[in-house]
Length: 310
Image (cartoon, rainbow, N blue to C red; front, side, top):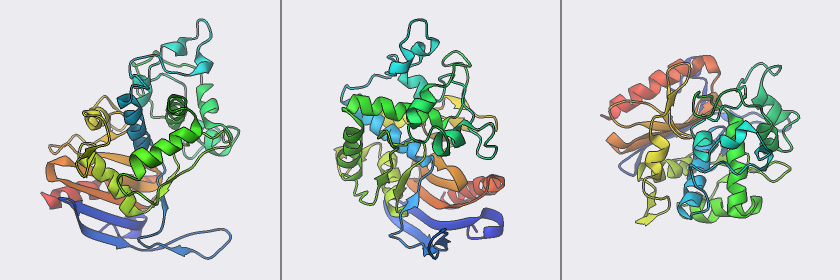
């Protein structure tokens, strides 16, 4: 079982929903802290999304596309790329969402000496994560190479803010057009000193609220009969475009499982996951702390969980 810490690391929250109903829910462990005793995890404990925030950003982009404020195939609205002869001016919003922008960005979570993501989040880039990512040099022509990049997501976040009318307006859009309509009341998107939503990594929410977000995508962007995301936007996220070096499929800010059930997922560092399985009308949220070497075991566990629901 995923509760085995030797195999899977620490699992703080596990939630399984089938046909709109919770069929399994469990909380265990405590969040470590440097300045106070560990905090026991309960149903009301906000937990960190890490890169699941990227999929929440996909929803925000969908709302702005539906409003006519963003266009997928237009050149990305990045002022730093508009100098004459800058090859980055050819990058579109679609390229960015698919992680096929061609920018030179190292997504390494261990070696700070070569890692752009560590430098962006915790080093010289942390005050303005979008500016740090926008300054990356082109390495490949757009739409030729897949490169998973947290920097790319923060570029997209800044584009979304400009389209929404500013950083505060984007946070307000998340609150009023996404979180509040689905009852995601605990959601807390964090920003940097420049005001940019750090959409690569930082949304805090309870497991149930992450499940609400997953249920919105399971229901094709419709909540209680009201369409919150444009028709076809969920399909945009879960349409296969690329594979990473390990052969895992990727769409647009969503990972693709490529099974016979149409399964796709939001995924984050240390094993965070919202697994959405349309073929079984089911979803799973797993939040915890698992080192990278446990990823194969977690992948196997998710596969067996889906099989058990067939």
